[in-house]
Image (cartoon, rainbow, N blue to C red):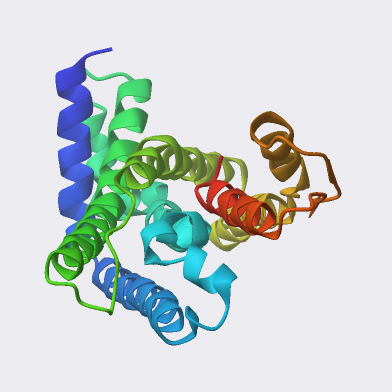
Length: 251
């Protein structure tokens, strides 16, 4: 596989998508929704954190564990919306006649264009995450009550292990459905159904096994269905806070 051909195909796809009106509409809408999500968590933590210990633990510092699924699903929809009509756009612009004359394999073109779509959606998301981390750092430096520094490694793991793999997977899926079905509407609906199903199943996964593993490995007393059995109330309270932090970090 020629890396130069892949990169050229990615650049061409990014330039093409920048000229589409729906690209700009989606990016601004997605950024607005993401900002609203983050503000909601921050405001709730600032106003209710002193009243409810659980809210004070799940704070903007761990916003990626709280909202990473929502962010990911939102921007995956963008990948689907920007990928489903690739074949039709090639036919309308007659670019397929030019592409077919170039010394690039179909696999190189597929990878390059998929990477171009992923980068088009990923760049705004990375800028949003960077702005959130920057504000958290400033809020911590000047002791601003509104906001906290976001856990750095949770953002890194989200970008490397969640964002790009999901973008590539759902982009590949919609291209596959576009080739299998003649109807573009059917292809995008099938992909969206698959996307919703994947994230719904992920949201239904129980954290009980995760909590049990933490309790049994780290705590010096017996647990049963998430209940601490100890005669020391201070130790019990600290244990609950620790397991909340453990679950919030996503381990």
